[in-house]
Amino acid sequence: MTAAAAAGQQVPAATSVDSLPTADFFGFESLLSEQEQRKLAELREFLAAEIAPFATEWWNNAEFPAHILPKLAALELSAPAQRGYSHLFAGLVIAEMTRVDTSIATFFLVHHDLFVESLYGFGSEEQKARLLDDAANLRTTGAFALTEPEHGSDVAGGMETRARRVSGLTGEADDYWILNGAKRWIGNGTFCDYMLVWARDEADGAIRGFIVDAALPGVSRSRIEHKIALRTVQNADIVFREVRVAEADRFAGIGSFEDTNELLRGSRIMVAWQAVGQQLAAFDVARQHAVERQQFGRPLAKFQLIQQQLVTMLGNAVASMGMMVRIAQLQQDGTADMAQVALAKSYTSARMRETVAMGRSMLGGNGIVTDYRIAKIFADAEAIYTYEGSFEINTLIVGRAVTGVSAIV
Image (cartoon, rainbow, N blue to C red; front, side, top):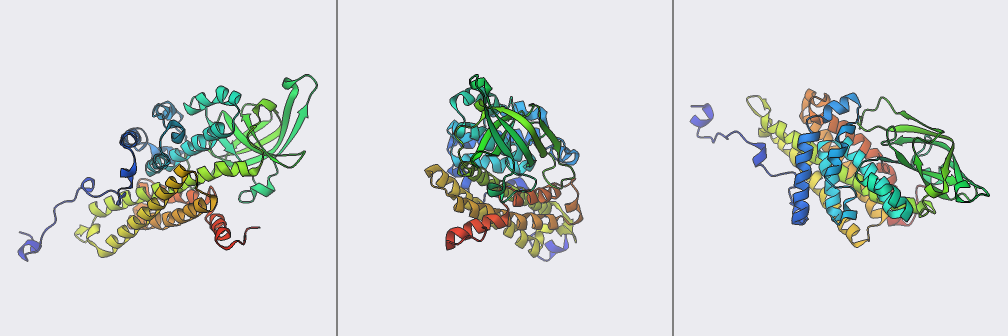
């Protein structure tokens, strides 16, 4: 008989994490239709079998697993809203992917929520017929080339990549554009087949969009090395030197940077869902560790400070998820505006930073090596905190909306 039993204290049985409530503590997933819930379960099975066992190795080696693309395409989850799924389901797809591997979720987001959605939203009928089916089924891959070496947050006004139209005398085949400039931090940029490139028209200063075949003469690509986050994602520096792009490959639906904002609003929402997924992942890992790890003769979960941290992490995740559920409802109604989206991205990424830091701390020294998932989660969070509008820029977008005064420009 143990001392605790002799003293009349209840001795807890070994706890199975699988029997405990999930990080979706308020059951937001139940808002999905039955069909969507089944599809989300199918995605989870795929991620558990095809991604989870290998994600850390890919991350450590900074290698992108191109071999999984046919299997990923077979899930038929490209641009879910275009397939009749709800915006809530589309967001939860990104959150679940992120929960398992942020890099794969980022690839999916760049390709489907930026490149493929761009084709749906701004491509001509000829462009859609020529490119959309292959892109939606991952037979070809795409990138979104907006950010430049010297222009990130101010790229709308500072864009230096230039496009010059050349109109010949022999008809459409002799009507083309010349691109010159450079882009940086382009996800999928090292291996994509096509990229949506944004450039300033030399004639009138307007922002134009172009579908650029990555194999065209004058396009050079190099991988950005030495990253501490999203190492599986192949971010690239891209240079355009006298690249000739046919007029047929100009996005006719793009006439200003406001059109770009339509796309960025959608991708910003998905990055906010990534911030949710990161928190779900951090909670999963930290709770399992707290339940299973023994210190001072008892599980870490027995200590009050550990429980307090876990509850804070859970609260952050649930609050972030609740905000994103409401954003999805606004999307469904067609009323989500940029200030609302900016608040969601800034808030969820701030809560994410706090949540993953608590999880990393809870694992002690093990929390800084990638043998334990939390180190990778912790590192990847820094990329989410920064891209699709930094925390500061998104905060100032909201500040402008609530005061009527811009502190950006």
